[in-house]
Image (cartoon, rainbow, N blue to C red; front, side, top):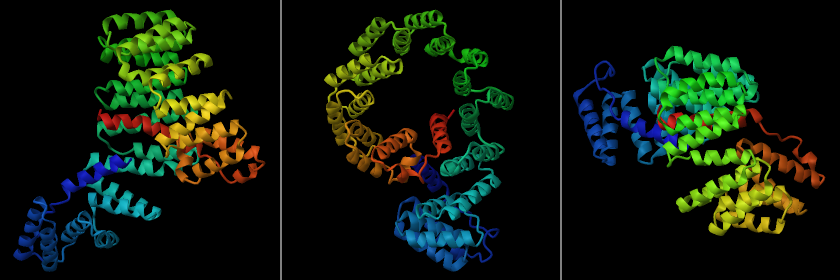
Length: 470
């Protein structure tokens, strides 16, 4: 979110420096005011902050123009005179003056100061003004900010559905339309398994645009696979084919479909064919995962070994992939073996240390080693709440409940812990630790907003569309 806000400010800085100085906008028009305002603009372009403020201040004295005051307020903010700059912006906003993009500055400041109701009102007015001016892309960016700001206020799916439907009624560029629509697809799939609604959304997109990009169909495909609707998944897969024919993705997508269908032989043959045509692709890793799912461990190990020999610099990732696949398929010993080999090659990798520690704790095996690895991981990433949770869970498994409780108390003293992608698992650990200390009542007034966590994960996935600009 931080990067997106910085981008909004960057766009703002490029576009708010020049406001037309004409009889139409200024009742008290005079040549001195025009001259000073233009000199202020020139000084802004050459980064002469002192002159910018001097000329804008003089232009305002001559004209008493709100537009000049807006330019002056932004210059105050950019030069570090925040108090005066935001004071002017607040006065302009309260007077009903149209701030446009400049309202983003005021919104950010009010949000920072914890004025939730006012910041929400400002954001709504920015959106309305931008739409009125035909700034569809910028208004969509601000609308997305509103969506993210409101994530954790939704306590049930009906509230979010109402909010989402209101958003979808607006006009957007294709990129933002795809972004909001893929959020809707995932929402209906993950919360209610509504296959017809997902199909309806995709059909609506197809009717609105002459041609959709591959990514739109890929999102729909993922959700039909998630809902186990293989007939509709196949329909979408056939539409994806025109984009992927002659590419490695063709083999990957089709192998995934046949794997989900339980047709191991077809999936395997597709991947083998694809590997011949695209030897540098990751189809071999997909085949290794398929082999593990069918208990063909030696074949999987051979693939992983070849990849590690070929790309030793990426071996930490490959070992982690191996361990995850083994664990997912209930092959605990093979997973531990992968971690051991990984740590021989990468003894200080914090992710490997943390994940292996957690797996050991989950199995109540070699807990002293697990604690050692957890401590070492935290040394590298001491602000990671999931790493801290791992240590607490190891301590719990060792019967050191008081130490585990102290860590979890610290984790949940930060409000963000209630909205993390792992919040449910963390809170479950917290509950078990409190229960072990006969303090279960301590958590009676605490809970995880599951709806908000799901929405957060959905938005995180759809952000790929904004990042790539489809």
